[in-house]
Length: 234
Image 1 (cartoon, rainbow, N blue to C red):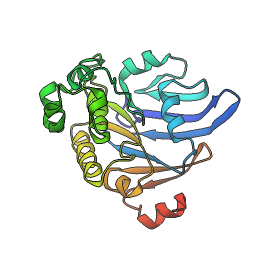
Image 2 (image 1 turned 180 degrees about the vertical axis):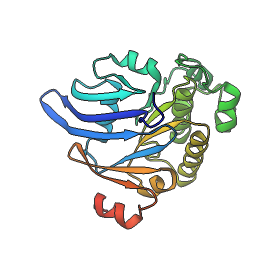
Image 3 (image 1 turned 90 degrees about the vertical axis):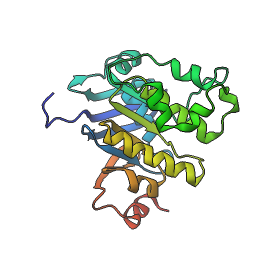
């Protein structure tokens, strides 16, 4: 892939749940090594965009290219094995398994996945809770585990859906520092967020989503609380 080409390029993406037309021509790109956010009100289509990129919606049309490869006709498991990792808002922790077992589940799709030692260095709490079942974890611990689990795969592109939702401020701050460290390690991150204060601290660019389409792209250097408040109506 040429250096100038985006790692992920989405063009005129439409998606449906049954008869409901949710995405109406989503177009954006994410460059290697950057953190980009999808910002918007509830129901704007942000989560559906991540699911469409991963191929886990009922129907989609348009183009999604990852490292120059068109993925719109591929199954979700083949898309994941190309090097995309999705962390859903509901986290998907296996409650009957302990922390160590959850971390052992993901297959390696590429070299460079984090070792257990590296995961524990990023998330010391997971080392302390290694024998605890998923049902015994706090919300913050579950979010740490969900992010740590996809880091084991070696996927260079991380799709994170509302990683700060419902978390205490100290945990939100910790998640922000983790994302900065992941960026320094070369990971590329597409982040769905409603917490624009958090987004301002971690992202390079912000895509504003309304009614299933991108209506603006705001570089973080030009972003401000007032700008994003105006878009989000808060």
